[in-house]
Length: 313
Image (cartoon, rainbow, N blue to C red):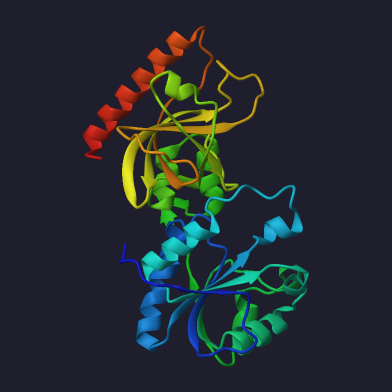
């Protein structure tokens, strides 16, 4: 992956563009390998055309606007997407608020008002299944018919082991607990981000202090115990993470995310942490006593340490 660059973040669409751009458009949820191929192609074309490479993305996700109660959990936070855009060399990102006004634009109006007047698009890359405008009436053919001031390129399907790389495919793999398959589609282990909140401090009394993560509405893998890495302040530490309801000590049924970071004794409260899921170790289950729970946590930690030693983490 290219080195990180500074990205200019523009929240909302400008009234008038300040300079022409090479553009790609999408939600980029998860920034999977299909998205990565688009970003790579964007950078190549922008260099050839001597234009800044730009991304137009939307917040909230259109599905969250149209069906807030039925939209799937996100695979990445907005911040996580911006970090990956930066790593690929994107010069600027336009974050358009997806609201009733934007949803009501006809395909013609989207091209004329957004792509031409507000963004001064000279070259645009979209997926071959791209839809846009009111009621998703516009498609690739529509875009090409109305592209008088810019050229259009379509990105074909990116297959991973015979399967189309897509956000849906990643979600389905995670729902089945297939971390390796999800990682293959993403090009990296699946990860969630959040800030550390105060918990019950039970882990500390058991000799395994944990960071209790408040996730930012990202999709969680199935309940269980995982070998993970924790990125804290730019440094990656090996760890184990429990995703579940803690049935041994809690009857509320509330899902929590608890991470024990190996050989780490600093205060993490309020800090941002990114947890990457490397391998599933076991299902979550209830134990007859805290002593049994302590022994199992020790066994989980040992198994994870062996794994990380083998992976040289």
